[in-house]
Length: 208
Length: 215
Image (tube, rainbow over all chains, first blue to last red; front, side):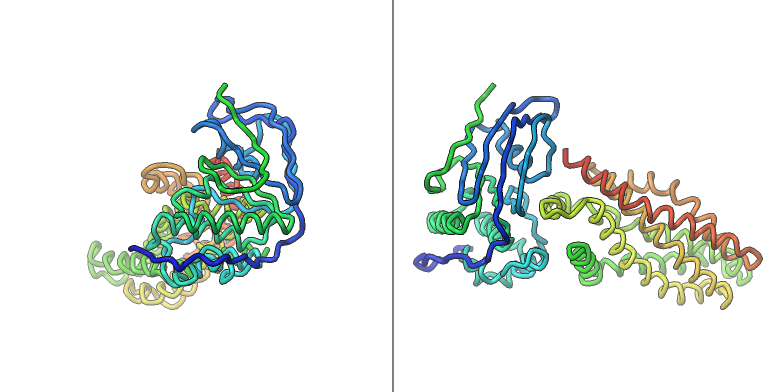
């Protein structure tokens, strides 16, 4: 299906964040499958901060995000997180057979966010009634982002959020990210392509 | 708490909305229909053995949707998303247990009425069967959820899940079939005790299995 996007209006999402967050890594080491991926990583993200994780494939960028999300335990060190977390990784996290709006509503019902605003923010508001499994790769990625936008969480962990997005959606994403930071949100993103995040600190993982 | 009921409501809607609830019931009735063909139309024999057959059918019906209980949610990242929201894996396990029971327990207790007629069970036996299923099906659901969580990461988990669950279900089967005997009231109590034991450990076992699969 070829989708014609309207000339991209800037749509600030209106999710209404729940409180402020903070995320800090203190001497964190990550071990997966008996292999040390990285050691003694330190950083702190305060409200309004953004950090981009960079490094070659397989260096542990996704593992870093999963550590930050609390899905993995660090081999050493401590991770402190205050405030709620929203994670966009390569898993869809949406019911594939449900219409997009209903699938998002399951999470929004728990988080208290607005599905309509989130869908508008990723320009998918016209596809709310389409089952998730019918969406294209790029649209799925946008649906995952909409799930994050509707989460009202101050800390966003984004794993390759720009993958499969078209130019207009990429631009839109950077607008929403800037908006989120302006409200005191925190972004931790792993990406191979520039996301247009201003003054993001760089967390560079290097081959050992 | 909110997440628990949201998850239960979603899973129940899933099993009722997409016909998942029909499968165990049809299977159950199929067994009740086929059994007389197997042993012959001998009324007293059917009445004597029918209750036990229905217990075996209930056990297998609980096992039917086992590969759809946990694994798809794990693959799609739904379980990760719940954890990120601070929902404990044990709470997820409990929600899965409640939803699975609601998806097959009550429908089975309705299906047992026509099944009892097919097997020439008398009213007294039907009543005992219903009581036994009420006490025993939560235990069957608990076993199914535990095994589903343990086997969720495996390839071709269906047959393995069956092999794992059937021996564990033997106590439920013994006391379930035993509770049909009008002389013994103790079997029903033991059935309820076994069932309660399974229900009380299932959220923790399922939670630990989900956490282990994440590594």
